[in-house]
Length: 292
Image (cartoon, rainbow, N blue to C red; front, side, top):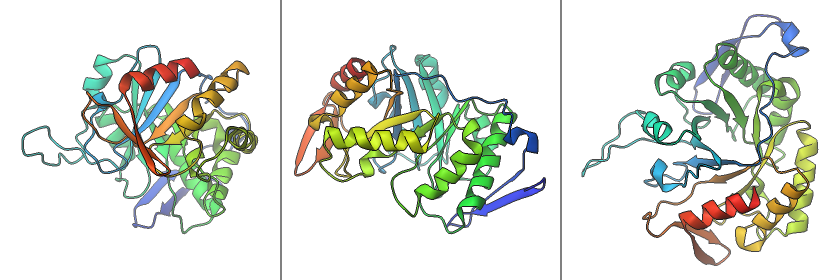
């Protein structure tokens, strides 16, 4: 497309409308992907509708930590909690931990006016996490790509990511977005936990190879879920696979989806195939450092 505006609606009727970037930027981009950092840990926080605080997830100073606000609703900390309509307390966690950054996930019932929201709450980035789309992949790529370009051009955010997974009705949209606007996408949070339950380490390594090929030149992060979603679980060798990749200089970082809310003195509930186990803050932090 040449000039003009692009508008796309998700299934809930919200629109994204931003001007197209100059055509020259399709060939020569002023934005580059983030430098590879194997000590990167990202967490989709608030994803499961459970009460959770930033402080529930360890922010080890030796690891760069990204909290991604995922479909979250902020509540007060009073004895009778009430919603604060998006007044996320971001400045406090960032002031306490210089290695922490906070991003907003764009998808589902995401609010309008992303640029205003990002500025107001001093967010660092945005994550594209649409899973149900009724438009075509080219339109999706143009509209989301122009949004990311606009936010970066105005220096509103410092990084952008997207969250594809291996599904024939979803991944083509992200591949189209990557093909044309990969130069403004810093991280690919690939949902490896969307693969079958009880994935083995050799299978996991093949999946990684496939997705690295799909998003050539990109920073593809590894992941596991904290529920029964699937993929390679920690107790089945996830961190062993990470260590192997680190040894080959092919580990770009790790992200988790929805650590379940539990008392900090106990740790995090994690589930997999007929059993539940605990992962304490120290366990998680140490395993991350060991593998990254």
